[in-house]
Length: 389
Length: 86
Image (cartoon, rainbow over all chains, first blue to last red; front, side):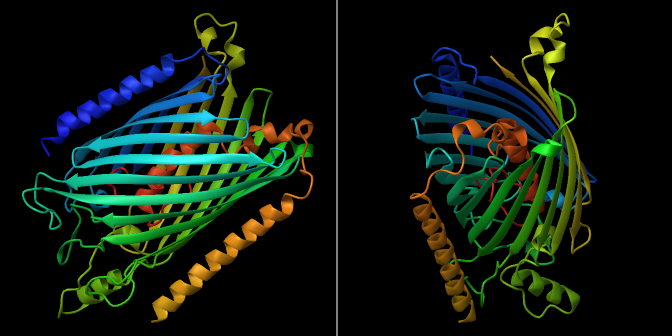
């Protein structure tokens, strides 16, 4: 673990240098933007504060670059975040990313890298994606392929999966996806997409305790999702509606160790509706509602409940007390205001912000899991400012 | 055995969906595009853009907490994670 610190520092420095290079390259264009955002998430036992900055630079040569940096500060005091007792702790996660894009008249190719680090978790993600527009620029096909190499470990104990002298456990994720977007009429477009991710490695929470000890979940998982999105504009009402649906299922590829059948088998449905309407020439409101349903995830969960209810005759091979692997339902209403700040132009000092756009949103996340204690409902506040430069 | 059959059915369903998509794309290639460039005024509006940059940033934050509170992931272009919040 100690050898990781200089490596992480070197990576961060390299990323910063690349980001600065990308920003310095080429003359500015109208598409160049700086975005500052802040997000706040609060539920009864967990609070997350996330400031972030993103810089995008588009070059007339067709080479564009985008870099971001964010900090997640998580304060938690319950099992929901993985502790077994009421220990209040604060964890900080730093994330930096860089994406480089090459544009042609009808196509583009994007390569990106993201590094994320906290005291017990490190992650490197590389993604390559491409898109092609055709049929009079009304259709677009896109594909993405990526690899994520994660490592986790803790100072407090050596996880079972760690092979001495290492104290850490790896998790490798390979993912891919395709999407097709079609403009169907001057007021209607639709998109269909499919994604899959293969996870191989340690997928438990290092701190979550169960009746049988620290949780143990299968080390392989194939996650799949298909999604449909459509947007429709009603000129008479100056109203845009957007509807999204996602179906998700996962499975254990092959035969699980010491387990008869598939220990994952999680399925979920998600529906989301967004409505956009201008209130004045520079102020727009967006209303959003998201609903999510998920089945009781896995047999290994049931096994644990049955064993816990009566005398334990044998310890199941997989066990967990993770609330998100139970039957889950969530609802999320949100309101957002988007303000083009042109009105600030004559205001002294603030006038230089007038070219940008402010956004602020508030949402209430209503959660229901099949075990107690669950996570509880959450307040979500986001605010941002994007300025061309 | 039954799980193998269910998996085979799932793969078959995906194959059918992919074939349908290809047929749709192939068929469309022989017809004029439904929308000309001068008819795209409404499609440029905020609510009609699926790739609005600041909305993508919001979605990235949402995906982070959805992934920590719900058992599923994906559907946003890149898996969540990069954190020990499982």
